[in-house]
Length: 201
Length: 201
Image 1 (cartoon, rainbow over the protein chains, first blue to last red):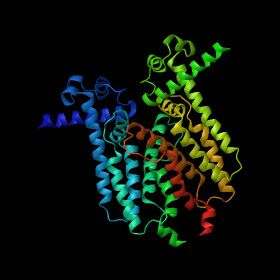
Image 2 (image 1 turned 90 degrees about the vertical axis):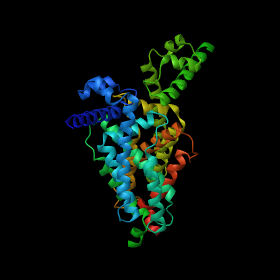
Image 3 (image 1 turned 60 degrees about the horizontal axis):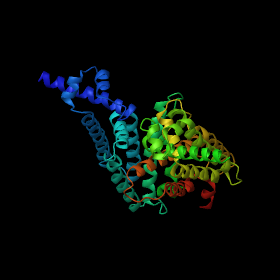
Image 4 (image 1 turned 60 degrees about the vertical axis):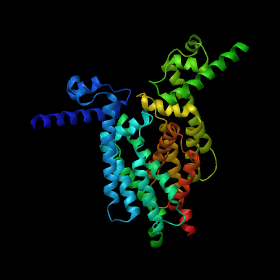
């Protein structure tokens, strides 16, 4: 039992080290021997747990996907109005991008390894559904097309990741958190797109 | 004279081939011998024009910067209202990202080569200025903060590049052009942020 716990801990350490390296250096820039050194775990123990760099990358991607899937399921299960859920979902996605190495690693790996499933395939159907429901329930202004809103959301999520990555590369100037930035952006956009705000004017 | 023209043409071919490769494969994934093969120009002729991969990358970046600088200068010289200029500037930047290999290569190279000047340092001051002027002339709703608008613009530009890159990697589904998408996004956002629209209601 102690042996199993130790193995689980070793696996966890390797996954965390690999996620940080894949995120920082990309797939080509990461090697098993680097991960072994940085994790302080022998290469033999590493390859016992993960047979290859590709297998390790798949495990990190799977962990990133799980985190995103869990967030989507949790937010979509809440009883708040769909437009509120949409905003919460985007904030949660950006929170994960900001704080979860495995999510950032997954996003980088999906760009660098052709054929990897796209993370957007997890959250985009939920975004589409929430927008359709917002539209149907009259929460959006009639002129606001759900498809354009979905494009906006895709730009904001991709933009948040890119802006984050840029700040990580040169963290010279102190900036608002990615989540804080997106919250301000929504405060700017929401009054113009939501029907309820219009009726308050 | 003919010799000079031929040299200029060779240089141009090498720059174009290099821009396309840096954009597609990144700095580490590109080699002078690959560029030589793809351009159909001997490695000897290549190294006569560009002494190293780093020199070639700098030339491509410089070309990308010039294209962006020219666009910023041209749009800021027009006499349209500042908020209109801002929208035009973002559309022009995205048009360059969509159609100019040297601009996309520059954006990729600045991420992969630490210390490279950021492209946003060219257009962000113009965006800030246009937003301040829009604000001062009462074109923006009083509740709209120029700094948050600038954050939104940064997200939209970075998002447009990321979405573009993603579609280039898997061009399965036909999508609206990047410029078309951004135009729709602005049509969605502008009514909510501009004072003139509000007064029309």
